[in-house]
Length: 84
Image 1: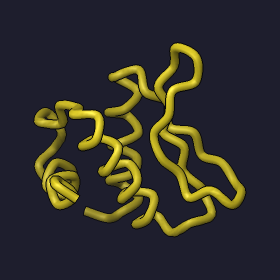
Image 2 (image 1 turned 135 degrees about the vertical axis):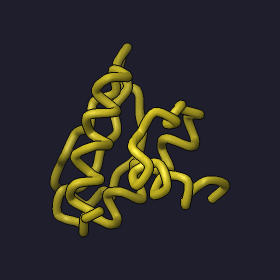
Image 3 (image 1 turned 60 degrees about the horizontal axis):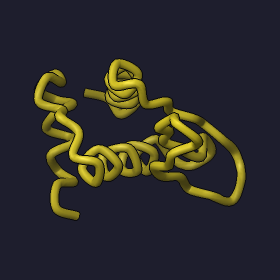
Image 4 (image 1 turned 180 degrees about the vertical axis):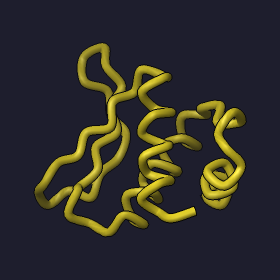
């Protein structure tokens, strides 16, 4: 599965959990944060898609989110970052 498609599927998944994926520009690469009551993953849209995916996968693991319902190729991608 292509990286862009994985990114799109992960964005949909995060939305179902109420986590916003904020695509920003600047010197930050990105990461998970809470803004008031909202959960947000910020990613720099100027970095390569593969790096954006790494940030999202790491945030999923650090927050112990259940990704078992993701389609197999997306789930397998996320599992590659478990324990990192």
